[in-house]
Image 1 (cartoon, one colour):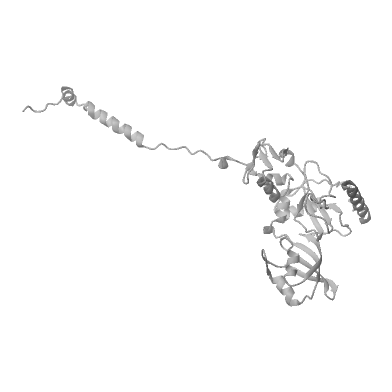
Image 2 (cartoon, rainbow, N blue to C red):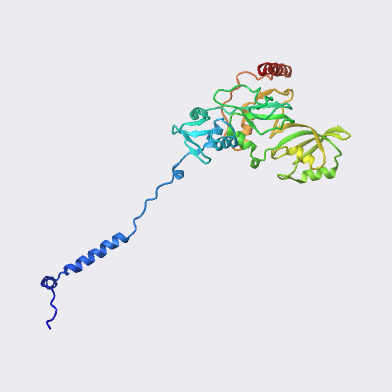
Length: 336
């Protein structure tokens, strides 16, 4: 039996110090297989959210005077806000300098102009019977009916007072200011003058200061001061650090006491102006505007719509009452 001979070409390559051809092919295959088996480094595509710069949509629109952040969030949830033709969603961010087109109810919002809007604040004496809403389907009067007209902005109420409560209500053109003033974390004091009907003793006042359990959680008065009265009809000035719905009334009712009158007399350090009649308003000066802005960590405003070149004269309460009465009569005629 003849021994198996290697191919001549293979023998020659071995003698010449070269690798046989099939060995080179095997090595080449191995190298190629290593290259194929090595996973390619994937280039991470930046997500849409990570590349979007700017501020939250509701914050921009609030600063533009289109409502408080809570109101804007409700508009977004109701599909009333669009960004470049697409319905906005909660969490969207925009750059106001990028030429983005934002619409509310189909009406385009001038964001560039809104950045230059002067922050204005009104003090309003809300009478009983007015609603804290922009419009009422039943045609009842609202707190916005008597406010001065604005171009390119609108008044935003800082909190609410129920229909049977009167007193100090602030309005501003800056939605961010309104949102911060209303937020519980800011702990802005609200003081009310309240007339109660019932027997009030020291133990009851101690419980109201310490705190009682309401349907939506514990609540208490930071301060209670006796303000006069005879018998079971007495007046107290009470201070809260938040503004939950009907909180003052519910606190007294938890002790079996009925509230017959409720007037808000202070918000922060802003007191209801003496001589301001029910239904009357007064625009606040730059000093008080910046007090409110500083209170919630906003930069100071540098401009005001008030004429600072002339000494400011407060209108007489009689003149305001006549204006309020005249407006009320005209409104009744218009509604008819």
